[in-house]
Each structure stands twice: as C-alpha cells, then as structure tokens.
Image 1: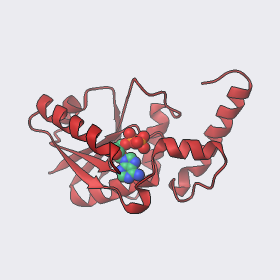
Image 2: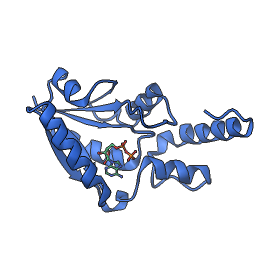
Image 3: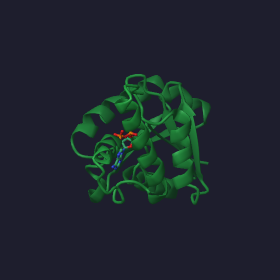
Image 4: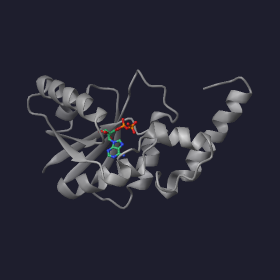
Length: 170
Ligand code: ADP
C-alpha cells in the first residue's frame, strides 16, 4: 500500500491545500495530511483546531487521514510507513525552500522521496497568510477557503480583533 504524507501548517486549510489533497488522494492508496508544529510561526488556530478544520473539509475522502506531529518529518514518515512526501508548488519562492527541504529529508531518511504537484493556476497566489490578511479587511473569502470553514474563520478573526482592542493580543 502506497502511503503519502502531505505536511504543512494549514493555518487554516485553504482551497489551494484542498486541491492538492484531492489530487494526491487520487494518486496514492492512503494520504496522511499532517499538521506540523513550526516553532517559528505564531499560528492563528491551535493544532487541534487546524486538524478539526481539515477533517471537516476532507470527510468525503475515505483514504485521507488527518494527524498532527511535533516530530521531525523524516522520523514521522518512517514511523507511519510512508516513503513519499507530497508538496504543492506555487510560483518561484516555493521552489527554493521546497528543493532544500526535499534534499534534507532525503538525507535524513534515504527511503523518503518528495513529489511535487503544481498548484492550479487559480490557486497559484493563494496562501494561508494572504487569506488571514484578506479576512482582517472583511473581503469575500469564498474563492479562497472551503465554504464549510468560512464561519469558523470569521469567528476567529472577530475574536482576535476583540482581543487586540482589549489589549489582550493572542
Ligand atoms: P501556507 O504557505 O499557505 O502557509 P503551508 O505551510 O500550510 O502553507 O503549506 C503546506 C503545503 O501546501 C506546502 O507544500 C505548500 O507549498 C502547499 N500549498 C500551500 N498553498 C498552496 C496552494 N494555493 N496551491 C498549492 N499548494 C499549496
């Protein structure tokens, strides 16, 4: 059974992520979407919330499992019996970072390869950070986020605004 892992911060999962998930789930027997802890990032959603949002938008995909991990990706893949990491590639800057990560992961775990799926053109410029920025200005998010999680996202934006105004930024 070919098991692939799609890692990321998914803060929150966007329509671009979901597009990669659907395409990868068609290619592999099983796809594990893994929310990775990135100490350098200050996420908007907790790890549990991010896992929950991804579970909700992938509930129609029986071969997709959603998990989270604090471990090194190369170790996590070994533990889960996976030899493929799936990554989405957008315009220029993704390539350099992802190329470096692919080489490092292969060095750490020689059984592990990285496969890239190119972003669809309509999602080429979409990232979680852009969505957070647009959301804070009240933009229409229906082209960027799966519709079932838009209310959760708007609620989070409102809570954040409230906390910042109260001098209680989280
Ligand atoms: P973001 O850059 O949105 O914070 P993540 O760190 O969660 O994304 O990214 C996880 C993976 O998803 C990475 O491989 C990233 O290149 C890919 N990805 C992110 N957004 C898109 C998109 N719009 N289309 C295709 N792949 C994407």
